[in-house]
Amino acid sequence: MNIVILAAGMGKRMRSALPKVLHPLAGRPLLAHVIETARTLSPARLVVVVGHGADKVREAVGAPDVQFAIQDKQLGTGHAVQQALPLLDPSVPTLVLYGDVPLTRASTLKRLLDAAGPERYGVLTLTVDDPSGYGRIVRDAGGAVRKIVEQKDASEEERRIAEINTGIVVSPTRTLDAWLASLKNDNAQGEFYLTDVVERAIEAGVEVVTAQPDAEWETLGVNSKVQLAELERVHQRNVAHALLEAGVTLADPARIDVRGTLECGADVSIDVNCVFEGRVTLADNVSIGPNCVIRDASIGAGTRVDAYTHIEGGTTGAKVVLGPYARLRPGAVLGDEAHVGNFVEVKNAVMGHGAKANHLSYIGDSDIGARVNVGAGTITCNYDGANKHRTIVEDDVFIGSDTQLVAPVRVGRGVTIAAGTTVWKDVGEGELVLNEKRQVSKTGYVRPTKKKS
Ligand code: UD1
Ligand code: CA
Image (tube, rainbow, N blue to C red; front, side, top):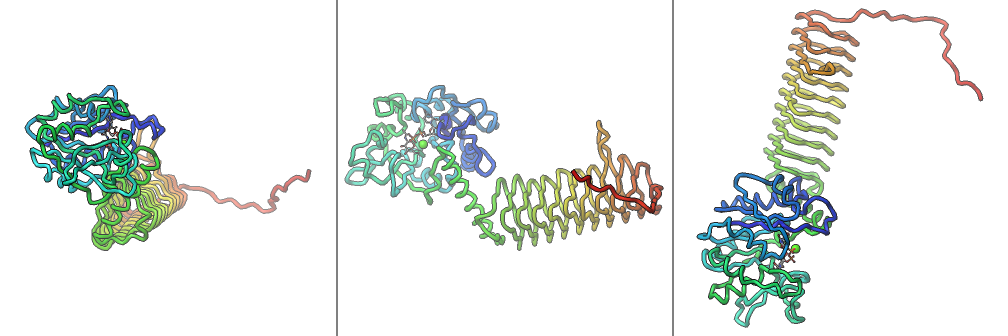
């Protein structure tokens, strides 16, 4: 089939300079969700109708398999579909989706497509408690669809109909051209309504069928920040339930946010208020403490990530201990059983098996060997004001507290660095390195006291 996604509207009620379909849900534009669902149906053509903020929309979701049709003026949903027609394959049906309806499931769309087949006209409908605002499905005594009437054009009696048009339809494509060309805008809103195509289809002897979604939220659109926030919660609840079904322990399914993909092994547990972004993989028996933000990371089996840890890209081996308050940045690679503790930042650095940096350190652009103990307050001085340089610390080095390693520098295997040392020259294997300093004590010293005013 062809898929046309309508995304030309401006979304005034969002009260934002950003085109409505680019507002993020789970960290990605609304429209990106619709495109992703569309792709799972393997359409012959995928066309997005753009208008307001067309350039921004193109830039945000452009891809080789997506074509764009321009609708300069928003003259109605029928007019919008008309703009896409030249880009469609006439030999297969056309499914119409909405760029601001992000959570429709592919299974629901398949049901509609199956009901319609290649020749019938299909409408996704829903019976709701409060149909106000929606187009109503008008059926004859035998139950066959006769037309769709918009709220603003509906009679008192029609307004009592509880079955509504979700907006999602599928139509044979060859005939669509003539049907759309014959639409009139002599209605309450002065628009060319896609909904009026139903009557054209019936006149042409084409059967109109309906299908229903599994859940109401699948067809909800975003017109305001309130609706955006509501759908965000629906989506996060769905993600959390899928994780629970897969055996992940969540301290509270209402307090996890996944903005990307989160893959979990067996017996993973996640405490409250964690945010996962990009692609995150948690291997078997990983536990994540409360209030962690984890992006683009792969966490090895049995690793414990304690509270308030922030990962912006990194890989850990097995049985690593991270946090509380640790920060990994891109290029951080921690070997098995490494420890990175409170207020330790690791960037573009490898830490070997069992290496430990437990307190208050910066490890950037470094190779830290196995079993190295990085004392509290150790800083790699990786930046000379112009360029970054690497620090190499070989296996079994003991780094005393408050050490500065001025890169580029290499510290040989088994070296001991005394506390408070600035290391700016390479150190050979097994040596003790220290800076000569003198400790001076003086007697009779009197501390200043505060002046009385
Ligand atoms: C439409 C349906 C209505 C249905 C409702 C479901 C019509 C005439 N009415 O009404 O039966 O119950 O959706 O939400 O189809 N758009 C364009 N170009 C246009 C007009 C709209 O791209 O010229 C896009 C909008 O950006 C939006 C979507 O189409 O994403 C729906 O348009 P909107 O004006 O919100 O239609 P409704 O009045 O809600
Ligand atoms: Ca709407």
